[in-house]
Image (cartoon, rainbow, N blue to C red):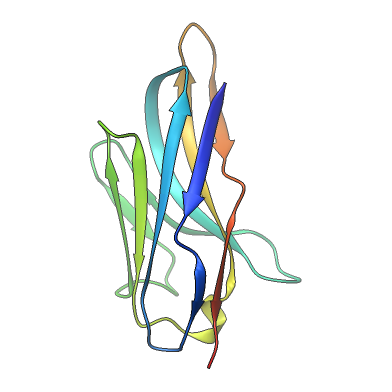
Length: 120
């Protein structure tokens, strides 16, 4: 009923920047919190950043001051601007959205993930 499609991943050198985007589509009545999570090889998925409909944000300590999350409620998108990237930022990044579907329940949805690799 709801699809989240990420884009913008890739290979970047340490110190570089990338911008991830996620677009939601489907029978959406309302999108509440949106966020980005990541999972590195052999590690659990972890929260990177979240943003409410009112643009209140939270960040993992490891990315504070380097990453910025933003959203466009009209376009149903959420972006993650990543700067000063480090090798330890290498992971698959997943978009997440708390969505109330039209004439249906409120549920968490996940994108398929996009690979970010930080390496020289």
